[in-house]
Length: 333
Image (cartoon, rainbow, N blue to C red; front, side, top):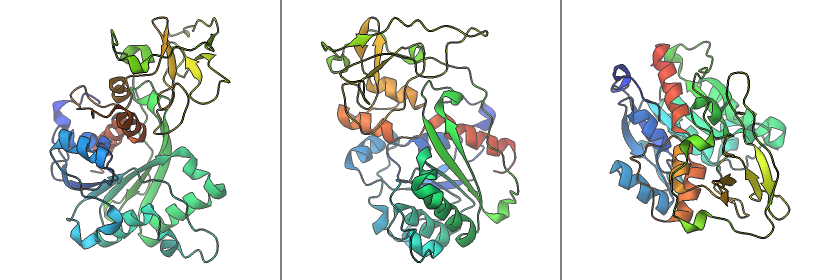
């Protein structure tokens, strides 16, 4: 997380928000750091709900598709990283109606009822390319034409926001007309570049992270610093296992981590594999938490496999904090 000055601590204390598709609370950590009040949370996964409750003492509501809009408290802001489901974009193409049956529709119907001032949405960057861009255009049409928001979107990368992970996500900001936002440029990050090495745990004892195989192949690659004394701000591949497919590549800790994933296979599944202290291993769950900007005080779930999935599905806290800080600085909020 970003260490905010005290002047920002309660800047959003007059704002309420709802946390949809909440996962383990990445958006909530960001909003709460500014003093905003969460009035409703929704998450269907039972393991994520347990972790969320342990950290926020707040039991999330269940499946959002089964919750009526009028059952949700009034709020100023909607936030959420909605799952990317297939959109019915062929045929009738009736805007709002064409989103029915997708989880994006649940955001749309809640926004249509409550008219929040702001929405901050997040998704994988490739959503912009699904069906040659038609799916993403459908989302924008619903937000702009049907719900009457001013909408801005941009791909933001974790590496640029103080966490050494090449995680690229599209963020969508939706402003109600009452905010009078006629032009918006996304925050320009100003963070020190970090290496994966900077966030690693010391004296790791967890046996499950170490990878011992006969087919590990390493190349003698020594990362070099640039003119400013920094190592490359990207993953540095130095080896492979098996055929070198996804989850079978080995990286140097002086570069950044690859994108954490909720899925995938191979010996380095979900975190990637790295040569650390002359041993090849995955990342620990605490290291994954650090890569997502979660604080050291965050209580990680006891189910290790679920924890890896949860961080792979999470939002980078630093990015959301940076967006909120920028909105405050620009006097939009």
